[in-house]
Image (cartoon, rainbow, N blue to C red; front, side):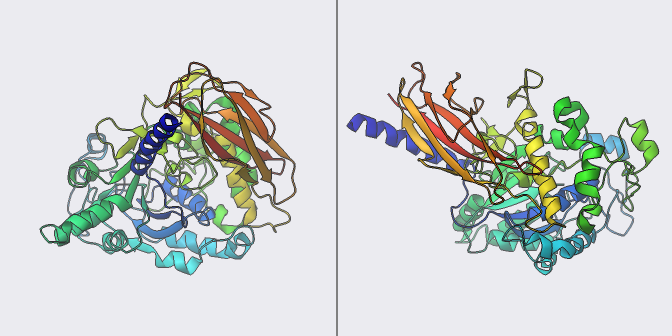
Length: 504
């Protein structure tokens, strides 16, 4: 018995250590987050969806920033050439580039205000429009990667990183990292060389969590990585494509109807209030001012691009906040667990950096192949159904709309098991609308450290069981997901996860 307890303590020590590196969220309160955005068409669509989910996290900042694709210029005619090779070749010297301005977030927040009273009937915690408007700040926007000047936005981020709330601040990078880099640089300039520096450096490094969709300027590589190496990073370079411009080449045919024009016309764009009316789609006749490359609204361009009217364009940045929505998958405990925001693994070069990439694959059961985007793509149908339900919340009463089930475990979420042991899995769920519930237990094989399949008995009931394989080794883990889907319209899904750790 003493040996078993000692082994368990070691295992738990390893697990807790991994979690702290993998951006564990404080148990109290919703995750705090700041969005930095360059205002591309897909940012706008991501922003509209973000507002529908703003009850799920604590938005503490909304900051305009620049990127390799969008910058405002300094108003003096100064010419700039991108540091990023593909952008430099594409655009050459420019005094500004496709800059959409610094009022579009306020516009969509005002549209949110028109549906706010309806939204808050359906879920607690929706922030008031006035509060959201108070969070909008202009950061470093003059040029790609500009981080020499303190700005309203960088100072605001600095203030939050230095506040007395110790919970993580998730810095969503929808454009470049330059405004966040400027905030960190100003902290360094103020405190480095003082008696407070060591404590401030530790505090900020432990608090800041960057979720970046690609590197859209060079400031992370040039400044943040060498000067703040312990700032945690979640880096999405592959998986986001399933929600971005090339989705028809990435998403399996079986899931593409959820991104097609018919679906968006019926469920999102029309008859769902003024906020969703502003959502950009192919062939919708719209055009972002000052961005000639937002030509998706043209029917001529739509047809020549092989798209249908009202097809999805892109929400390439949405995985950054999908990650923050607690649906029971526990992915915020450890980014390698996988969830609505994708699945990343710890870098072998930097233990504070978690990445996807060609080596991080899930088995795509539509194509029967390992797929680097499938850790995100596998959730397309449930994510889109959830989006459609939230769109309904903008215009329907509580009684008319559908709401997700509440799923719970009737056992610990972390268990210790032995090879050959039969293990019970016990869960339950309630549906606020009284809908019938469908249960499914499944093994998330790609996340397991045990490399093998298990057989789950009674997998389609709240209470199931499995037998630990005889060849499972001490320290190996098996992840069991309880997935519960209601029978409402649209069907909504929530989860719980049991992690079984093997000891001998």
